[in-house]
Structure formats: C-alpha cells, structure tokens
Image 1 (tube, one colour):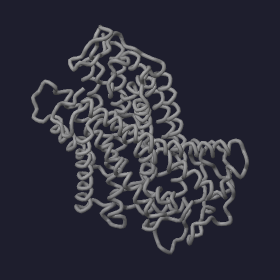
Image 2: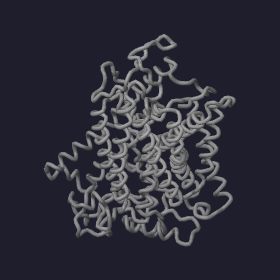
Image 3: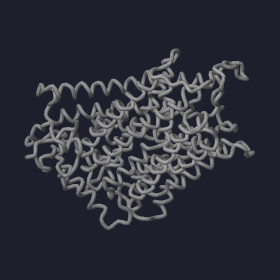
Image 4: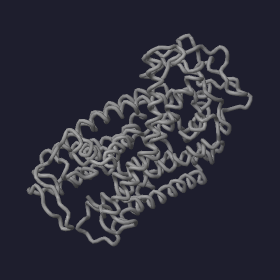
Length: 532
C-alpha cells in the first residue's frame, strides 16, 4: 500500500539537498495508514523524493531551487498558461475514460480461451489475483509520480529507480517503444482479421497484407490528435462499444444452436488425418489431462497481458491537473475489469467448451453472430492502437521540442514532426503484424518480454526505493506484521517479473515454434485470409 505521511507534514518539507538528492533533516518518518493512500483525493500528503530532478528537465528559472512536488506541479501548470496546446488538463473522470479504453479492449475475448486451457476455477482465481496485484503496483506507481511530478513517462522512472544511470533510461526507452509498437502491431493484425472476416466471399489480391495496409493508414490518421484530453473522449466511446461487443458475443454464445465448427460425433478424422473431438461442449473446472506447461503458461500470460497496463500510467498522470485524484479512476476501472472479464470469460467458455474455442472467441460464434458482435469492436481495434501510438510519439516529440514553441503552439514544423513520428511507428507495427501473424501468441510474447518489467519488477523496486527515502526501510525497521507482509509482497512481485521474463519468454517462443511447425498459423507476409 502506498504510504501516507503524517498530517503535520507540509509540501515544503519535501525539499532535497539538490547536490546529492538526500532528504532534508526536517522530513518526518511517514506512517503507513490512511484511506487517502488507497483512494487519493485532497487529503493525500506526499513523501520525499528518491533522487533530484533529472538533468534535461526544465522546471522554470535556474535560480529557483524549490524542488518540492507542489512547486514542480505549479510550475508546470503556470508554464502552459497562454499556450494554444495545453497538456495538464485531464480530470480523474477523463483519466478514467483513458483507462477504460486501454483495459476494456479486444483482449477480453481471449479470456474464454484462457479458461478453456486453465480450467474455469483456476482461471477465475488468477483473474482476481492478477487484478489485485496490478491495482497494488499501480498505486505504488502513483505514489512515485506524486513524489516526482516532473516525470513524463516510464523511461524517466526507469532512470530514477536505477540510481540515475543513463543506461537504465536507454534500456527502459527501448522496451517502452517496443512494447507500444507491438501493441500497435496487434491492432493492425486484428484490423486485417476483421476485414477478412467481413469480406470472406470477396476476391481480394493478397488480402491479409492489403487489409493490413488499410488498417495501418486508418490508425495513423486517427492518432494525429496531440493531447489526451481529446483522446479521452474517443476512449470513452471506444470502451462503450467494446462493452456492447463483448455483451453481444456473450449473449450470442448462449443463444446460438451450436458453436461454430460443431460436429455431433464424439470423435472423427479430419481431412489432414488427425483426430478431432466433437460432441456437446466440454467444460472443466480444472485443466484437462494432457494440458502442457507451455499451453498453461500461455493462457496465464494472456490473462496477465489484459490487466497489465502500467506502462501508460505515468503519461496519463502527467496530464492530470490534480494527480492526487488518480486512484479514483484506477479503482473504477479495476472493479469493472474484474466483473466484466470474469463474466464474459466464464459464460462464453461454458457455452462454447474446449473443443470449439478460438482466440479471440468471436470465431466460436455462428457466422452472423460473429460478424455483428465483432463489428462493434471496430472503435477499439482502432483506438487502443492509437492510444499507444500517441504515448510513443509524445515520448519522442517532447524530447525533440522540450523547450521549443513547437511543443505548445500550432506550427507547421511541430505538426509535420508529430505526424512523421506516428507514421514511422505504424510502419514498424505493420511489419511486426506480418511477421508474427497470430493473436494469442503475440499477446503472450508481449506479456513475457515487457510486462515482466513494466508490470512487476519496476514497482517492486520503486516500493523499496521509496521506503528507503522515508528513512531506511521503515516497514522492516518498525517490526510490524503489516510491514513484513508488504515487504514480502514486493519481493514476490519482483520474483514474478523475473519468472515472466525467463520462463514465460521460453514458453512463448516454444509455443510460436510449435504453431509454425503444425501449420496452425499463416506464413510471414501471407496473402491468405486470416479471418475468423
């Protein structure tokens, strides 16, 4: 739980010795209680910094040495006054819209497949556990951003966490851009999948590649808005249409006569000579006999990917007018996630069963039902890729024009640069989508490579760095049960991240190799349809 300092402490007590980043002697030892540390609001008080302001970040006059959180935030707000383009404008409601658009997404339709592999009971348990861990680590991240309001993205946080080493910034930046670009690639892939599904009867030359180009161009155009304030309105609409889409898919799964691909025979021989299992849908509470470690871990990584989105949160918080309100948006989104993911995953799985499950689960519906429900996903197919493209583009754009009028004014140079950066990221995303042309394994690969750091390791390290800044590791020093439990929890979170990075990556790569060898997926830059 993010800590709350004692009420007597004021914002001015947050100052550091600017030469080495050590705490001033007037900083009190914080206590770890208080509802505001969980739910935010005006009552939140802010702990000391773990390091001085990073070099290269301008906060006003060089003679102004007040580096308290409140002072930095006030300088940022004052610097935007009078400019045409303002960034710190989001309320917690608008931030909630961004969160909903990020989490209430197409990946929800991978939950039925994950439950079919893991079994219904383990699947539901893991859904709640992962949601709880992500909520907790997001609160740790929020506490870090309150202490350091000048951070613009997770790359600044990476450098500060690892003792201001520049290599940490570059390593985080590489993972940050790759993660976002992989997500853009996923949406190019799904865009082509949707167009193939809708036009299966039409003869289109090299259809999957052609539709990938169409999806890339549409997403690039839609990603041109430069502030999250504008994108939050689109994000709220995107989340609404996603909700309608998964609700329809769930209803259709229950009312259709049989799942797509239904065969009344309990077993039969497929055209390729392999044995198929048919009959009524089979639903199991636990994994079926023969479930491999690779398949089980892939299903777990699919669930984890859908919840883990901390990589964008520093950018969202950096555009809030009052970052203390962020937990309100976070709690609203987390509660909605648990309810929606669990219901959709379990109900669709219950009616489709192990034999007929696809990822995403739209492919398990009869043709008409599939097309209707999948069509309501169009705004999310476009918008979520747009959101991550925007986060990547502002990461680059802000560093090019940090102290330039092109950042806050409508200039030709500013807009051409912004559009060019976005176009470059979408071209790379298109290439990735053609090289890794399958849905569930792409989700698992992103989860193992990047979520290991941005979902777990970073925030366990951040917890211990902040506790050290509070005056040694207070949770251990005070010898309380809660302190030891929180310390143990954060060690566990770091170990989970290491597991994702090592074992998770191995299992995902092995799964990809097996899919290519079995011919279950198309080839690189395939012209064949990838429709559901």
